[in-house]
Length: 358
Length: 231
Image (cartoon, rainbow over all chains, first blue to last red; front, side, top):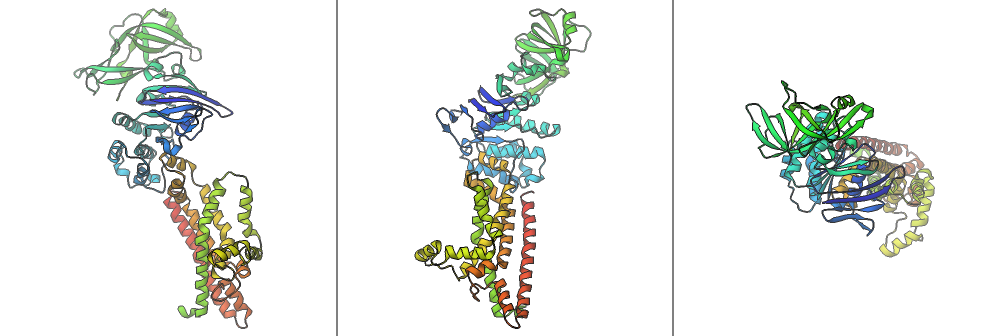
């Protein structure tokens, strides 16, 4: 359990942030300058906020009211920076040992970290000979071996190109699955939130716009997420059955079923599904003779105008799951869509992005 | 090779090396501490301390030697304490010569170390901190190793400066063969004697050789250490 309440005046910009996260991976998401890194700095103890209180797993790390303050080196929070910050005068093994030697005995072992992050082949190398992605893996391993009660990742992938990001993300997912370690993950890439996060804290201009489950927040049409090009509904679903002959799998999310290309997970296992808003077609009659698999009946819950894009965002309740569809205002008029009225959401199987969850 | 110099002249060379070594051995840790305070400290009087450290570089060496006499002379405030408590006398002794050399070389050592310390990425110290390293631990495990090129260069440059120090040594420690007569003093003394040119020339050659070796060593070691810390 993580509880953050902090206020700080930077002069040009004031931070006033309050959120609680249940554990798991909490993403701090927002545009540059929203105050994400300042929140991490305050949690790490690198910034002393003007007011507020930070509690991690029952330990009060700072509380301006009572004057409590734990020094950075005694907070036991694993910090991973955007620029890996490996010690250049040590080998990879030396870097990993640095945290381990200074930490109390803990559950995270050398073998587990080396294995999870694929570091075995790098141990004798020096940081300057590593690629950006390798450096970041070592930095994460170093932080893990310091036996932290919480891992703070401050845009760990921001300085990497797309290929390197794709290389690191599966490692982070493995960490999440293998170690029951809460993480605060700062990012401005929605893709990473979808991939990793359980809880989402939306920050803007030093304030919390919303805090809640990733699925819950990404389906809300009134948040800035919905006006992004990559706006998408995120659903937590379960694999219902596989149809190997048709090379399809059936997912169930609430009362909604979705056909997607064949998956590998066992039936009953949980997955996270992302359906981009601009990939959904709306209809009022079921089409026939079409390649489409998913014709999902639902009810229009809200219609948000997006004047800048000459588009409308339609929020649809499909058996308890929320879908977002971005269509033209003209389509809304032609179909005579009204709030509370029925609608069919047509979803290409190939447009559905499915990720395993821990 | 050995008969290139007379035994007396070898004594002067050995004495010079010993004096310089002692000056650097005691001066360098102090220089690192001073450089750290100057590079990192934010306190009232920092500019004053900076100026004080640099004074020996700009003052006539004779003035430094005289000030040392005032301070460390047997009747001086520090000298009297040293004599009463430890029975140590600095004036006219080899240790005194080392002190004079050390004070003259101090600003050079501080400058080299400070430059290097200012180049250390504070982000790495933050990383060390987040991994549980306290201030002293951080300094010895991260800051100092990363500043090592500057510390080594400072030591060698300081050592070389000690080999050549004249004014402060002769003022404070006098020109006593076998005790305070370092190479520059020996060369000066030789030139005062009739037919002393040959002696002066040989000792000068030795001086040139030592200075060159020092500069080359500083360059080589500096490069090696920089490569080691990945710069």
